[in-house]
Image (cartoon, rainbow over all chains, first blue to last red; front, side, top):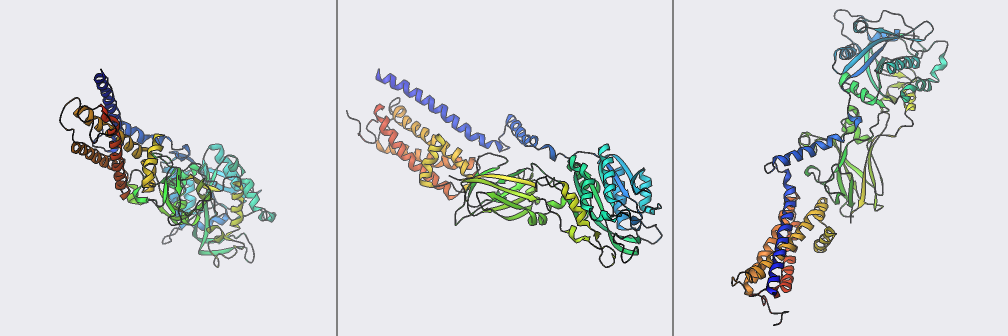
Length: 457
Length: 137
């Protein structure tokens, strides 16, 4: 009797052991799924599905439109004539002519442009801005053979306003090309005083519509009569190849502007400024298990399989501060902001509950691009956290909106003699101040990657 | 709950997992898996020894030296499991891994002894292996 109960309980126990053990082993084999040799077709389907999953959470704002509508506005006041001297045998084309030719043909024939419009911007007798819609060939002939019209001045704010209005009506990105030397009516010189607020008013539609502005500055040899904004001592000067700045303003929705700057204009000058650019959710992750970015100290992702990992547990010790790397995908940012030099100079780190510092900023190299888990990140920021001041908090890597240095360098209060001070535009800082005022209410940061942390237990 | 129990059990002697970036893998997968497998395999081998070999079959393996053989067999399994768990979960091996395996061996010996004491009374040939205590007859 006793014997049989023992035997039956023994069998039950044995059965339980076999069942649970097989369960245990199954769990283990689950982790080997990544090995391509042992995967069955069903499992490969599974891994494929999980590989596709991250793509679906890519935020909509990062999807650049395939094609954009572009309106090109070329200012053709007398002050612009020197950029487009009449051609003669043995005379080289100016930088302006070369670049504008490329730009126009890219707009006309490029595959990233859907609808296009070309406009000559001038003013009428009452110094009101006028936009003449012209064909590609007409605007091209202006660039290559010079301006024949006689247009006195450029009421800058009014020009911007009309151009912007037209583009908004047509749903196009504005590309405005001008020397941006403000030339108000001689009877109304007070406009110089209010240039910043006038610029701001003229562009207020951009603010209402949530448009971003990219300003690209370049200098070109200038041949002919130069009309400075400051009329003393000379009312006008004749230049023979001195470099005068010209500007390309691109105004439109952030993603459309980027298509124009990255795919239509392409070879951008070094002087770039971006206003109203903001990235609400750039992809980022703390990289804690990658061999290329080994962390030091006690730090681990709060959840074991989180991808991306945006929450970490850490515990810095006096002897061993925590160091780890954050991968960021900044490929959607304007190109000038993607340079590591720019990021090293401008990236900020802020934190509640700890005192982190940036150790290094690197861009993805070839070996990283070929690592599947890392290929989605373009930049890597290594952080050091020497101590915590609270048991939980946040660490944020941020790129502040900064005004590039070249703007002050290219600005002057007296543009009368460009031979002495080349590459300067009268009151450029004031013009830019007006643009910046549009985005005062916007976030102070181009992007913000925030990682939560907890003290490790 | 089970995770906390086994993590506590191993970290009692081993301290925090090293390298620290795999802490979660140790705590959520490796420690509980190893602990559960240690428990079940030890129980299985003890049952095999007392109830299969020395009750259902009469193999004559009732001497203490046979018991020690099974204890060593169990200890070897207890050494291998942590290492396969660590490598199977793609965790970097470290001297910590081998310390962990060693601690697991110690636990396996203790557990094997405890299970033997508890279960040997149901055996026919081996109820006095490795010793008579606490059974009386």
